[in-house]
Length: 106
Image (tube, rainbow, N blue to C red):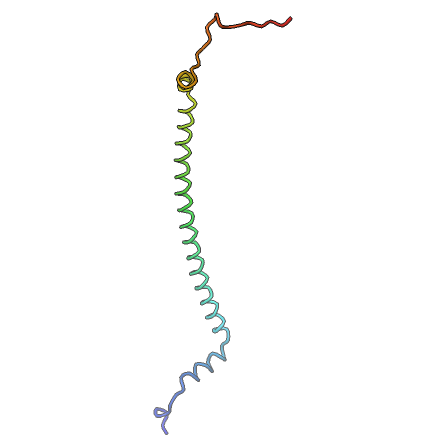
């Protein structure tokens, strides 16, 4: 048989070569683990960015609602509005000087 007619067992040759260089296997495994870690951290980062964006939108919505409540509170506590409501609903009025009674303690 001539050397060109020999069948070469490629899988066996690769396996034997890897056995002679175990550090190559280690480097390959570490490279794959590093790639997986990058993929997982990128995915986690994107998920956190999505959560952050939704929380920012919720904060903005709550801020708008808070401002509306502050405006409503200021309108409801206006002095003129309170006086008008008291006069109409409770039929109250400011006392005149003749209705005032002064009490003196000795």
